[in-house]
Each structure stands twice: as structure tokens, then as C-alpha cells.
Length: 453
Image (cartoon, rainbow, N blue to C red; front, side, top):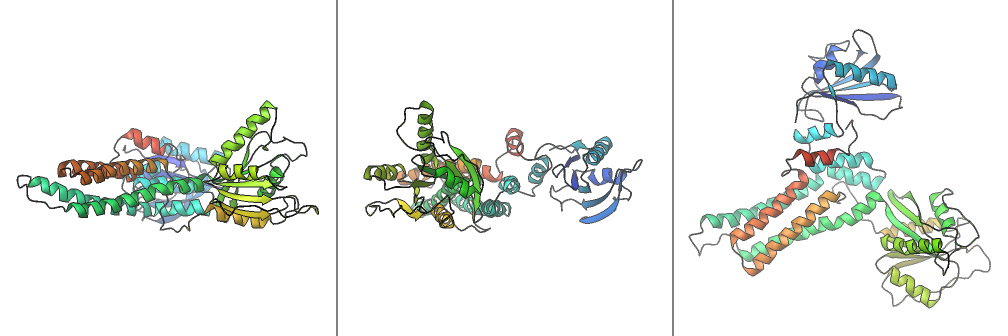
């Protein structure tokens, strides 16, 4: 890490106020030279009111002083709160650069926090997730990771793995005593199985983690003119999809996201399923079936009794999904309740009668959608993996641990088992940063951060 003192605006343009962050060995000195008060003797975690710009006043500002190591980056840092004028911000930045600062790179503040030991790598990545959080669930997951819940889980795993490795390597030190065995193989197998179970549990949480992060996909399917687009508009509380009595109006998927009970759901309105000679509509129907496969929840909208074949086809298409059979248009007098022979089916399903046009039972449908998502209760101590890099590392570590278990089963020697255990340790260390040393890897992680973070 270089010793440059860096500066950047940390707030979006156009607001009433702006914050400019300065961090590095000369941060306090540089700001003090252009501030109306001497900051060189200022204590850490103190706030000072004055004017920025010695030769020509630029703005009245509040200056926060943080001294190493008690700052976000672990370095001497200053935050300048000024008015949000683009001109004022540019003039202050120009002044700071002229005095010896350089403009910060994307994510450089958080990268310095990591390099200075203020955060491990998984916590640093949680900062970006926290900034990007759009609902209660993603916020709680990011806060949990930022506060070290994931790091603590990995630390316990590493501690148990180190015990296994130490026992096996102790045997190697006494390899001339063939009858000496420090590590009981049956006990090692049980410990390794328990660690593998935990790693797989973390890896498997990635599916729900990604769904919560990107929005749980919900496909709205059915024949033409059953009210799919009307239902989408009702759920979104806006006229997002075109509603028409003409068959085949929706020829492509339409997506939008809403928040239900603090969780994002990504609704996909699809082309109506029917026999057609229209080439473009056929493509839309193909995409309907593709959307079913990608969805976690499928809302099947119907307005008449489906045939046994139609019912069986839908159950087959959604056998690994949560299916909500939704009878629409119940406001019409001639409509009667439909019946379904589902006693022999294992699908997760529910049946609801609604009127999308007249907003009847839409609240019950929303409750059914949330229930169908089967979202675990998330607290700040829970660990749910949302990062692709973390998931990939957990998967590789599980594969390496499987080799250990196979080796124990086959009675391999301690030196071979120890080598695979060290692979598991090394891979898990990549998540928190213990084995990451190249600037290329770090640059790839932090380049997606905003400049002021």
C-alpha cells in the first residue's frame, strides 16, 4: 500500500450537504493548512467549525478529525462537511490536491481499512452490500457479515481444521515410530464430517442469499386473457404491463420488483400459453417456460376449470417450485369455484380466488407469495452467503474436505491427509483474506465500490 494521502467526495451530487474524506499520513496537516483553525493539536474524534480556504474563503464547514488507529481506514483521517454545491466541492478538492493529496481510487478507503487490519476481506465486501441493500433482509445480511458473524463461523472451522492438521503433522515428526498414532482416525472422521456439514450448510445458503439479494423470482403464467398483466399491475401498484382483450398482447416477459414484508420479489409477467402460428408469439411462449424454470414461485392464473392434462402439465413444470393456483375474475357472477384433484401430488401449492381488476383478495395472494418463498427468519447473528466468490471458495473447500474423508476411509497416511487439510485451510482463508496477497485480486474486489468508500 502506498503512503499517499487521498481525498474524494463521499456523498452523491445534488444534495444540500457534501462530505469530503481525506485519509493518510498528512491528512490532518493538509486540511489544517487551509482551515481557519489549527488542527495539528486537535484530539481524535472531535468536530471543528470554521472556514475552508486560507487565501480565499470557499465555504463555512464542519471538520471531523480522526487519529490513527481510531478511524475507518486506520490512518489519520479528516471529513469535511460543506454545502452540496458542485462548484464548492470541486474547489475544495482542487485545493486539497494542490496541497499534496491525490484523488482516491474506487473502494480505496475500504481497501486501506482491510490492509490496516480494521476489517477482514469478507467484512470489507459487506460494506458494499450494505450500501447496495434495498430492503430489510439484505440490510440484515450485510450487517451480520459486517459485524463479523461470517468471519466468526470461518474462524471456528479453521480452528477445528488446525487441530486435525496439528495432530497429523505431529505423527510425521515421529514417523520412525510406526506404531505411534497421535490422531485417532475414527475421531478424525467424525470431526471432518461435522466440519463438512457446516461448510455445506454455508454453501447451500447461497441460493436463498442470491434470491434475497436479487429479488425472489416469481413467474406469472397462464393462458391468454386470464388477467396476468392486470394482476402484475395490481401487485406493482402501477400500470406496468399493457392490458387488452386482444389475445397475445404480451409477447415477451416483463419484469419488475416490489417489497413484501421487507423482502424483494421479482415478478415476471409472461406470454400467454396457447397454440399459435405467430412466430414472435411462439418465442414469447418459449420464454414463458424458461421463466418457470428460473422462478422459485409460480403463480398460475386461470379463469376456468383446467383440463386434467393442463393441470398435470403445470404440476410437472413446477414440481420443484412453489405453485400458487390463482382463480381470477371471481367478481363475475357466472364464475364458480374450481376444483382440483391434487391429493396424490407432492408439489408445494396453494389455491386462492381473486379479482385482479377489482382488488379482491390481493392481500391474501401477497401473503401466500411471502409464505411460498419459505424465507428463514434472519437475525444479525445469522450467516447467509450472498457473495459468489465466497460460495465458490466454500464449494472448493468442501471438495478438498471430501478428499480428506475419502483418504480416512481408505486409510491413507497422515502426510497425504495433512496436505488435503492444508488445502481446505488455504481455501477458507481466501474468504477473509488470509491467503490473498496479489494486487490483481484485491483490485478486482474493490473496483466495484464507489469512489468515496
